[in-house]
Length: 361
Image 1: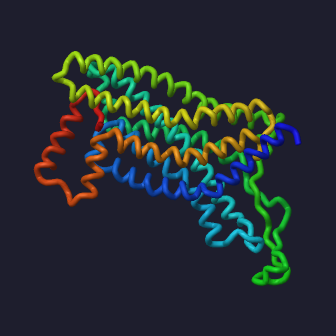
Image 2: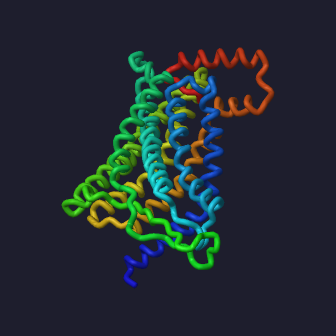
Image 3: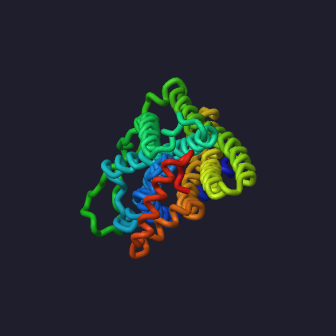
């Protein structure tokens, strides 16, 4: 066996092995992310554009584990032995629609992470400029969420229509040992087939599609993420020096530093996965030969599985770095704040909305 074939087989087997346990992490991620969304949607958290974008990221992430959970649910309901019927036309079409949704909202999550870093960068560099006050408002964050969703959905339309569900001309017939089926029973096999439009001109449109998705949706964000991280790190150092020079304003300065550190950690969590996936997309496009079982395709599938685990870091980062987030969690699990605490919460919200730049950290 040649070395490329051995490498391809290795990654294919690794995807199968890891995929067998993906539903466990997907279920955990879904439950934690639902709780994460609940916290971010509380009134005391809806006070800044950063939190609006964080809520958008959490809503996008909730779609990602659905495929793994659906696959495992099918095994539990219908089984996975030799007597299990193949997927019907409706189920195969539903699966492809779910894959498209996952592609769409996965891209939204990445771009919103980039927007989060971008908004924070603009905010910290224009603290004293009143013309930029609007970017700290919750409404501005939601505008970004909807714009990103619209642009990402445009890309996903091309992704969806790249394939079609067809009967490959074969039929599944149950083995003789499956007594529950009547004699002569058979059902057609349905598969995803790439449309002829994408195969034309030696796969020119497929190559363009892969390059555009790989560069704009994966590779380019990974160049912008480190750039914004470097800028934010420099601004963070400036804030530290300024706080040391003005001890009396230390509390406010420290809050701004924590918010900046938070965005830096979030950007790192996106780069870890998106950068290698972007490289794999570009490799597939450059090869000119597409194969669902290729090494690059298998690596993309593997990293998508790892992404399910990585999305848990969004909740952990918020919980560990945001005092407002922890207070909200504590409030939910307690009987409720006293009237004095409620008054303090209202004062805190008013103060945060007036501060420059606004954040709930």
